[in-house]
Each structure stands twice: as C-alpha cells, then as structure tokens.
Amino acid sequence: MLYLAGALVALALLLPELFLILQARDAGWSEITRVLGRPLTVELLRNTIELTVFVAVATGVIGTAAAWCVVRTTLPAPRVWGALIVLPISIPDFIVGYSWHSISPSFIGLHAAGIVMTLDLYPLVYLPVAAALRRTDPSLEDSAHALGVGAWGTFWRVVFPQIRPALIGGMLVVSLAMLAEFGAFEILDFRTFTTEIFTELRIDTPAASALALVLVALGVVILMAEVPGSGRRRLARTGAQSPRPPERHRLGWAAVPVLLGLASLVVAALGVPLGTIGYWLTHSHTTTLPATTTLLGATLATARYAALAAALATLLAIPVALLAAQRRGRLARLIESSTLLIQSVPGVVIALSLVFFAIRYAFSFYQTSTLLVLAYALLFFPLALVCVRASAMQAPPQLAETARGLGCSPVAALFRVTVPLIAPGIAAAFSLVFLSSVTELTATLVLVPTGVQTLATEFWAYQTNTAYGAAAPYAATILLLSAVPNLLLAALFARRRGGDASAAATRPATSAVPAIPATPRTS
Image 1 (cartoon, rainbow, N blue to C red):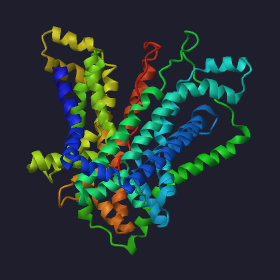
Image 2: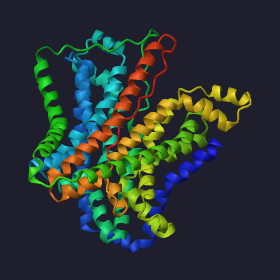
Image 3: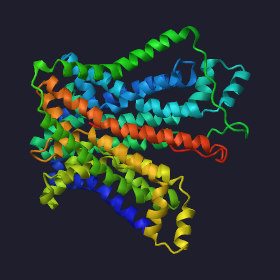
Image 4: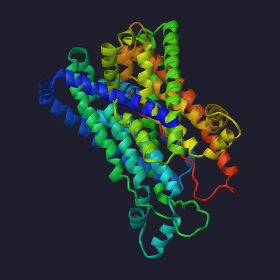
C-alpha cells in the first residue's frame, strides 16, 4: 500500500510537466521553432544565464565568508550575528525589489537585479556552509599545521574540500531560485524567461509554452549538475574519539573590518527593506491607504489558501517520506527521485500547466481557488518531503511492525505509532509550506480567482501603479504573517537541540539529526 500511495503522488507531481509537453505539442513544432529562433529568446537566455551565474557566484562568496566569520572566528556575539545574517531569507524577493526601487526608481537593470537577488539569496548558501563548517574535523587541520602548511593552504586543502558539497548545493538552490524569480525582475525592469512567459501568457499562450520548456530544461540541467559536482568523496575523522568542535581563529586587528563588513551586509539585506516599509507606513499621507476591511480580507484569504496548501503538501509527502525512510529498493528510490523533479519547475510554469489542464479537461475548476491551492502544494512539495523524511529517518520502523504484530491494522499502526513519531517533521513541513505559500507571487497572479484579493495580489497592484505607501501595509502584513511559521520553526529547532543534548550520552557518534531545509525563494 505504501508503494501504491507513493507512486500515485509521484504521478501527480509529474502531471505539470506532462501538461506542458501536451500544450507545446498542440502548438506545433513550427510554432515552437519560431519562438525559440527569435532574437528575443536569445536575449532572454543570455540575460537569464548571466544573472544566474553572477548571483550564484556572489552568494557563494558572501555566504561562505559570512559563515566562516560567524562559525570559525572569535567574532563577538556570534549567535546574534548568525540570526541577523539569516533573517533576510524570510523577506520575499519582490518586497526587497520594491524597497530598493522605491528609494531610487532609476535602480533598474542587470546590476540592480544582481545586487537585490544577491542580498536576498545569500542565506541559502550561508546556512549549509555554516552547518558544514561546524562539522569539519579539526584533527585534519592540526595535521596540516604540523606539516608546515599555512593558514590559507590549510583552508584550501583541508577545510574547503569538507564544505564544498554544501557550497555547491547552496549555489544550485540559488540558481533554481533565479530561474523561478519574477517579481523582483519585473519591478527592476530586467527581462528573463519568467517575466517574458508571464507577458506572453496574456497574448500568446503557445509562445509561453515554448519558453516554459526552455526554462524547465535549464532547471533540470541545474538540478542534475549536483550529481557530479556535489562531491561523493567521504572525509573520515581521524581517531575514534568523540568529535570536538573546530577551533575559532582569533580576529585581532581584523575584528573591526569584519564587523563593519557584516554590519553593512545586514543593513543592506535587512535594514533597507524593513526601513523602507516603515518609511512608507509613516509617510502614507501622500498616498491612499487601503481600507482595513480590504487588508483583513486579503490576509484571511492568504492564510486560508496557505493553510490548505500546507495541509495538502504535507499529506502527500507522508507516504513518499515513509517509503524513502523504510524501504531501500530501487523502486523506492525511483519514486522519491521522480517527486523531487518538481523543484526544477518554476511557479509560473506550474501555473501555466494547471491553466491548460483546467481549460482542456476540467473547465469547472478554471478560475477557482482549488487550482491555486493545488499549485502551492505542487510547488512546495519538496520542502514538505524533506522535513517529513528527516523525522521518518529517525523513527524506528520496528515499532510499527510490532504494533501490526499485536493486531493493529496497517492504517491503525500508521496513525497510532508512526505519525506521533514523525510529528515534528509534519509540523515543520506544514510551517514551511505555509510560509512559502504566503510569500508566493507568480502562480498567485496567474491562478487567483477573479474578484479574490490576497496580500500578494493587492501588494502587486499598488506597487505596479507606484503607490508605494498603499503597498506598504500589505508588505508589512506579509512579513508579519510569515513570522508565525518562523516562530514555530524556531521552537522546533530549540526543542530538537534540547533533545539532542539530553540524548547525547546514548546516541551513537555516527548519528546525526537531519537539518530542516531553508525556505525556498518564491516570487
């Protein structure tokens, strides 16, 4: 039954790609070649690749440098700095773009988009690299020093190989986020595949489908790049003793420039968006503020859709996560891998495929909230899967087998034994999908039913008309609403850390608690 449920989920997650291929086939090969052969398509490809490479490299450098300063140096108050450095991840890209553009309307183009996206996405590199730096083996560094290797040589020969998989993984996540980005690029007047697909969707659906195929192909290439580039070599610890934490390097005179650099990063990435929203909230007399009822209605609609999507995505993730954790066969790995392909498909492409599906096969669902909730669930399913799987990997399957041996049915054993064991992962999955759905823009603009207002659509309507003061309350509400799952996740982390400390004496040295993944970028 577990295999059947997992296979059905995998099939459902492959439907967007299938619908996109069917739509492109209906358009005809001649139409596809016409669209792909346009000079505009070549320009879009160049813009997308140039910006993606720039931001991936910039976030790699900034994220690694910040992680090193926080984790491996005598930086004052490292926990405070770590929290401040990570906080920009909770601010949607389109709000960051709005904040910078409202300060200077001439802040547009390639360089503007590169700066904004780098400031918003570097935590996606910082988080895995910081975690990897905490796990590095200091004995290897001691051996390098004993052999006369200098500080830089030790970093490149010993430390960097240990953090390289995390660095590459973070940069690949950034690259996927760049392909899916719409809101910030539209605000900053920089054309990419996503912005052009959104434009073509209104006037030329076949052209939008052809461009979407290219975008999906780029996403698959980036996703597959992790296989050869992530590094499969294992670096074993020297000795069998309990691992000791890596030593921190004294900053000395370098403390001042390091503190100034981190402070500048936090001000640019966190201070500018929050300060701009605060400015427009307090200087809103120059614009028309939205009515309280309109803001409340948009908030309730956003929370309702996000909660439904979070519940659906988490429910779909449970059988696949249990299959990945409890089965080791080739079929189980195939099902899990096929479900993760959805993360290479941007939100605008998922929305486009669902529109095609509704018009061709289920017109009664067209322009309904069902499609919007389904899009959220499909888009953020990988988040839910990783969270639930992390808990399922720690749940002993023998307990469920014992329950079935005592007369419980498989369904009863699932709900009475397995679900309570993986409850932390379920809560984390619900929280992350809820947070991501609240901050999602592209699919929302395409699929939101006529006459329905959400926080994202209302913010976008005011921002598009340069009514920055009127857009500010919606931006602030998005941040406040997304703070709820952030607080829940923080509580889960604190609880797990406390549990880890209390169980340290009985846990084997080789065990590890899988980390909850960073929030994906959605706009």
